[in-house]
Length: 412
Image (cartoon, rainbow, N blue to C red; front, side):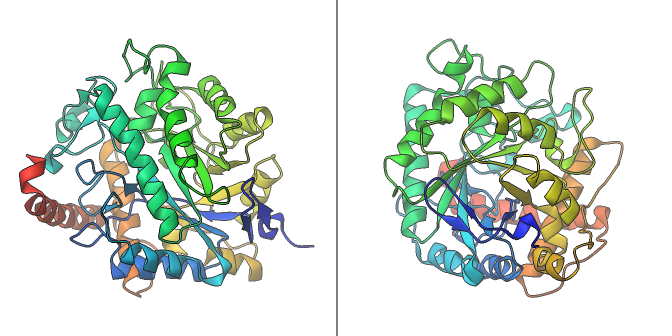
């Protein structure tokens, strides 16, 4: 009898995935100087497609070249040449794999040295302790800026379909713009976009509706949502349950449950309140609760590295299982599981006293492996966190200079 991980799954839009294993989004920072998918990024996606997942969700694709999570990020907006995106979609769809583009706006989570737009529902800056100064001071968004963001999400989704992608995932988690509107800690507005949860969810719901209005019925639309922000007084599981209910009937194909933000990186297994996350499948308990209360298929991501854990998740009313870090170290883990079910993937962990630096080191180790995979080299099983962080800082500095030179008149 086959493992349930390798049983096909049909989404509400009619798209069928060959199995339940999903390559979840990771920040790659591997764009070309024009913020387009590079040859290395395209090779990386080909590697994952050949590795056996049923669905690939891209790393952040930004909807505005002046609002970036990092200088090596990919951008898709009105007027972008689609040729590189078509090549990326083709590479990711080998081996009967489906591919979705994760689309995002960082809001206030923009590094100060990047420049550009640092937008948020309110003027609440990131609280990163002694590292707070690394980020720009956000300005409260005007009505026109909110409408512009809604249009941009719809445009990017429409272009993604044109380029050959099978769907999009709207990023409304991890403290990015849509999550900022959902959070009572960040959203202090007293207009139609703030106050009650219904008002705070309005932007996300309008983004979903604007995308559904311009893409095909068979094009998948997913939402990545925090199960909780893991900060006292923040967006929590009760809120997530209500937002999932609000999305019912809007044509959402999957809700991916994650958690945390730059301030509380629960997606790396650490919370900023008193809650302890499971060692694997961090958000399973939350996802189970959401799955019981919504008719939208639920996916959960976070810390999964064993087939045994995948099976546990799937037997908990969860439709799809997302994996990220483990696929940066073993890109063909799903294929290997079919031959060796007991094989355990690698999840990098750094437990320095400075939690912000620990988080950056983990991301640096992952990005280092993604670059190796993109250039056709084998990933490192035990990369040095200190050396990886140093290399990443040097590389990011160079990419930031490249970005600022390209957009010098706009970012200052």
